[in-house]
Structure formats: C-alpha cells, structure tokens
Image 1 (cartoon, one colour):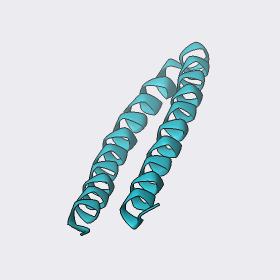
Image 2 (cartoon, helix red, strand yellow):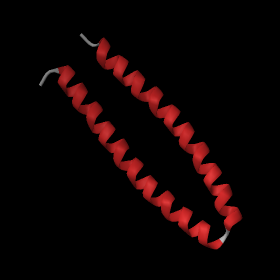
Image 3 (spheres, helix red, strand yellow):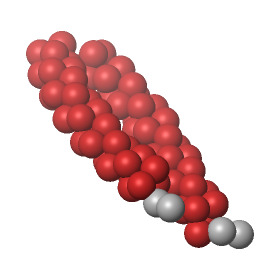
Image 4 (cartoon, helix red, strand yellow):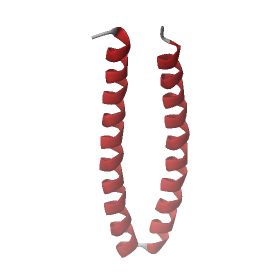
Length: 77
C-alpha cells in the first residue's frame, strides 16, 4: 500500500469516527431536549440556545480541520 493510499485510508477512518460520534451526540442531545421540554420550558429554551451555539462552533472547527487535511493530502506527491 502506498503512502498516499495509507493516508487516504487514515483520513476516511477518522471521518467515519467523527460521523459516528456526531450521531451519538445527536441522539443524546435529542433525549436531553425531550427531558428539558417536558420538565422545564425555560431551561429547555436556554439549552436549545446553547446547543445551537456549540453546533455552530463545532461546524466551523470541523471545516477547518477537514480543509487542512484535504490540502495536506492533495499536496503530497
């Protein structure tokens, strides 16, 4: 296996792990949202705002990391 193929495989493995963690996180967030919605509407609204903020931050960080990884992969000979 060439270095480039190994690098691509490592990148794909990392992406699969990120996607798996994202799905797990989404399931947990939805469960907490249901708990808050049913027990305390005020806390629910605060929680939703915080989740949206964190989601935007996560998306920005992920885009930066993926862009850097893609540039590195494309620059390899």
